[in-house]
Amino acid sequence: MSTSESSVPSDRSLSSLLLLLATIAGISVANIYYNQPLLDDLRKSFPHGAAWVGIVPAATQLGYAGGMLLLAPLGDRFDRRALILLQTAALCVALLFATFAPTLAILAAASLAIGILATIAQQAVPFAAEIAPSSQRGHAVGIVMSGLLLGILLARTAAGFVAEYFGWRAVFGASIVVLIALSVVIVLRLPRSKPTSTLPYGQLLASMWHLTTELRGLREASVTGGALFAGFSIFWSTLALLLAGPPFHLGPQAAGLFGIVGAAGALAAPLAGKSADRRGPRAVVTLSIALSAASFVLFALSGSSLTGLVIGVIVLDIGVQAAQISNQSRIYALKPDARSRVNTVYMVAYFIGGSLGSLVAALVWPRFGWVGVSIAGLLFTGIAAWNHLRTGRGTLAPSQ
Image (cartoon, rainbow, N blue to C red; front, side, top):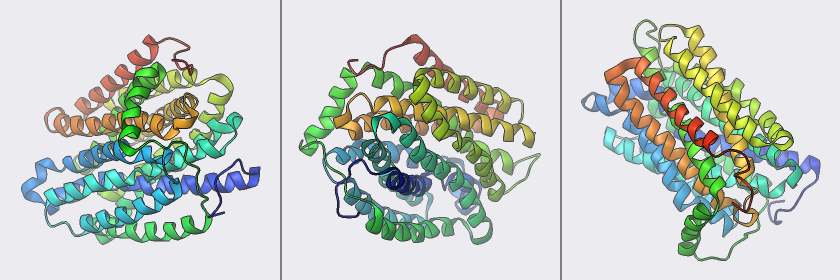
């Protein structure tokens, strides 16, 4: 299959391809979350910059937003399989710099590059929308997104475990080995995709502005998704710091184990996709926002309770992930010949929100502690609710 152009495959072949795309999405996106449970270790390794360790996850997510803007649109212009392989090779180089970074500044720069190149995941998701029949698009996107979301969540578990026994530098080195193994599977199993645009690179980028102004529904989904992900990032960017202090006094492995708890929420992704196919996505997004808001209320009351934190993680991850699946399912229907660019607009906003959330967390945590972090997350969720509800129904018709 590695030399044929993508088309609608059989059910069995489709399932196999979606599983591979989910794996690609999960392994690649995990690289922008490995650093979150390592913050306390980084603070000890770079004591002179201890107050600024929060810049590492912020730089990674900002890089991801930049990579979405500059690299992800190329999926409409070139074979996505070739793009995935090229980005994987470059990502390994960036990870090598992170592994041997002698200063926090160099680690932050490497993290920015890692974020840019880890947008491999955003070639996988529109690829799934391309190969699936329209009646199964939400479900197909849900499967690949479940892989992506598991990568986001289990990255913290894997990083916490490796750092506990081998040090934080080994986390980035291990990722290089995994990416090289994945590249072999991609060469053997992933088909080529069929480009849908012949626009030069500059015009391809410029066309995203026109898509943004033309599609009101894309703008609405982008703001809602970005605000929800900002709250999500606020929580995960500070969890390791909360657990490291009293009354918990837990290391990076404990922070990483919360990823396993959150992974339970990722199982809701295919179900959210099916629900969006059957009932429409807006109702799913409304419920998702309500769940996210409830989680931050619970977090504010659970600054010294592991049980409360565990329940809150499950509720938050289900809410954010279900909203993400529903938003992506509906925006892919807006412009079938521009799925990579539509996805780029949405995901740039999404990860700008994530980077903003990490930055806010770095500012709020030293001054206002865990309650301040929880209130900040709730405020971002409120922005998502306001933006989603003010638009009413029917804003995502292809004509808007």
